[in-house]
Amino acid sequence: MNPAAPPRRFGFTVGPLQYWWPRMQMLGFYAEMAEHPAVDTVVLGEVTCSRRNEFKFDDWLALARDLAGAGKTVVLATMPLISTEAELRTLRRLCEQDEFAVEAGDVSALAVLAREHAARPERPAFVIGPHVNVYSRAALAEWAPLGAGTWVPPLELSLDAVGHINPPGAPVPGVAGPVVTEVFAFGRMPLAFSARCFTARHHRLKKDECDFRCRDDADGLLLATSEGEPFLVLNGIQTQSAALQCLLDAGPALAAAGVRRLRLSPCSRGFVQALTAFDAVLNHGTPVGAGMEQLRAAGLPGALVDGFARQRPGMVEVAA
Image 1 (cartoon, rainbow, N blue to C red):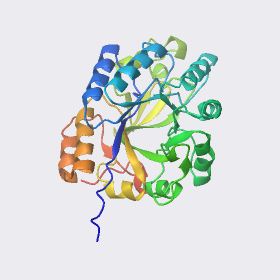
Image 2: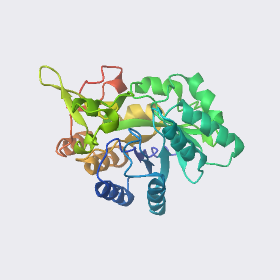
Image 3: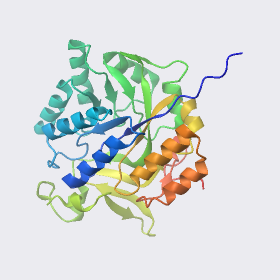
């Protein structure tokens, strides 16, 4: 009898930075990611507000090349909400370059990427981002032949649903083999986007005269209920959960759903500890309890929840 095959290692993706950090802080963060042995893939780009212009297109490309030189796979992300002609031009420029794979933030990016892939099939397969409405196998099977290689499910989908859409035993075929499933496993969840800037509104400013107040909130602006409980976070035009998604204890369920990669979304405190804990528990056999203790001691900017992944309300906290 042949010995059982070793379990497949989970890959780790550092998701796009959702906040506006000072340039040097951001460069320092990505320098850490370049050196961290658990990081396989890094997603770069402005995914919240185009007015955050301290990093421009050529700056992102230069950073991408530095990370690629450090052995990381790099993906360039487009914005989930396109509302101006300038944003559309940036989207096209991102999608038309073929040095790095692109993550589609919305269907307009998918349309451009599908066109580009039809013209140049050798270009890197693209990523279907979490804000694209793929809620069925039929939807995933529609986009996959047009150039998709990876699917990041919408955040509110349970792991059971993810496994039904792209099951490990019968994955949706893509242009470079079966479509890979990557799940949002850690970080504040981006829940909604609006043409209005809620951070500017909070400070009684106009969107186009916002004084870039979101630079003052390294992890967004916390909103509480009337009872004083953390509820949501304002991050410019984006609304996030106050709590952090955490699937550290979901290893068997992730594997059963066919998940190959886990996405960790950056935060200003405790992110390296979180990345290290995920790798230790899911890939090296460290007990879940020890990993959770490490997370809870890391000074993270919110409670840890996993309700959506388990078909429960999203704010249900991870069991102690």
